[in-house]
Length: 199
Image (cartoon, rainbow, N blue to C red; front, side, top):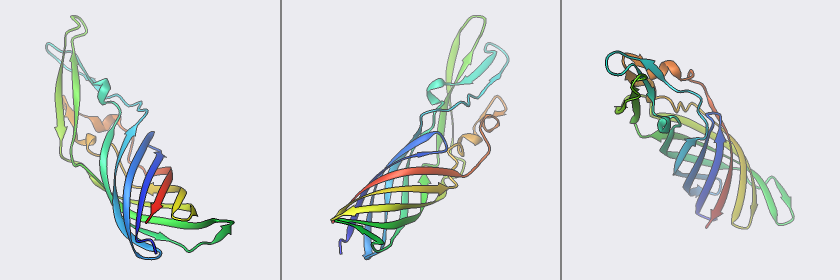
């Protein structure tokens, strides 16, 4: 039995984001392993741009465009389950596998806010941050495994209660919460592909 599995995963999810993850699992039994991964997700598109009005020298504020898209590093400890080969196609074996885990984000978020005077076109930028917000989310994945010797490729689907806007919902600017501009919390669905090497 190969005791170790190293995996590189790439996926797309319903937050208009992609994610990349490198993980390792130690197989305690032929079809049961424990381990975890480190990954990074980032949005390629975000239509939500918080803004508002103020008084004095600056008459408006807006979230800095470079902070519009959200990206974060995460850790994901998990339990790996797989089935024996369900089907053989020559040298290839087809099986099912699943992972149950938790996704741990850094409990901190910060953004730059641009204050603008629309008459003089003067501007300044300030930094707003918070350590509030949810940072632990559950995560379940399942997929079809096509293996050859000690290498495999997996195509799968995942579901999670991940809320990528969680920390930003607690940032306030001029008594306005950024949460007012972001969508309501909802489940995150994803499609992914994995490359696995067992040894």
